[in-house]
Image: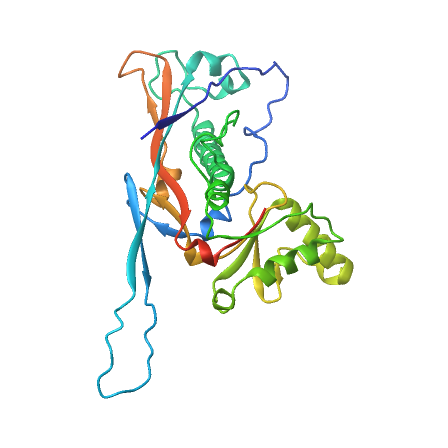
Length: 309
C-alpha cells in the first residue's frame, strides 16, 4: 500500500513593524462538515470488508409443504484504506527572525522555546487544514488521473468510485444556476428509487455552487425567511440537503447517510498531532510536528445512490 506524506516548510516572510497584533492568522479553510455525516468505521488498519446481504424472495403462497427459498445471498465489498502522514519541522531560527521572537523564551538553548499561543495556533490550524484537505479528498480524490494535484493524489474519493460503478444511478449534469437549480434537484429527486426515498437518513449532498444557487432561489421565493435568518438548514421536498465543500462544482449525490462510510484508525487521529522539541533529543533547535492516520471513504450499495455528474 502506498504511504503518502504531507510535507510542509515554514519560512519567514514577515517584516518588522512597530505594532505587534495579538495572535497569528491564517487563510480561511473548508470545513469537513459533509464527511462528518457519513457512517464511521473505526480501527481500520489496512482493509475493511463491508458485508452485503440480500434476502431475495422470502414470500410464497401458503401450502402444506412450503419450498425452501433460501435466505438470499451474503456478499462483501473490500475497501483498502490509505495511510497518510503529517510531518514537518519548525526551526527556532525562523521564529527568532519573526515578530514571534518577542514571545520566545529567553536564551537560545531553551528546550521549550516555542510560544504557547503559537503552539495552540499551530495545533488548531493544522487540524483545520487536515480536515479541509480530507473534505476535498473524500470527494475529488483520484490517484489514477495524470496531472492531479495535492490533495487529490492522496486517496480515491467518492466521485471517481461512483463514476466507475455501473450499478450507480447516473444523471447527466448541466451547469447549475439559481434559475435552474430547482429543475436540476427535481431530476435527482425523480431518479431516487421508491425504496431509498422512504429512508429517514436520505440526503442530497451538493457542491458549494449548487448550494449557493439553491439559497438564492429560495431567497427569491421567500426573501424574508432567507434574508433575516441565519444557519437555516436546507431541504428539498422533505429531503435534507447537505453542502459538500470538497465536492467538484455541479455535482450532486443522493444517498442514505448510512450507505456512505468514513474509515479511519480513530476519529481523533485527524487532530492528534504531536509537537516534539528536538533540542534535548537530537541537539537540533527544532520542533518536529508529526502524526499519522488511516483514511478512506466508500459506500456499500451503489444501486441505492443517484449521482448527478
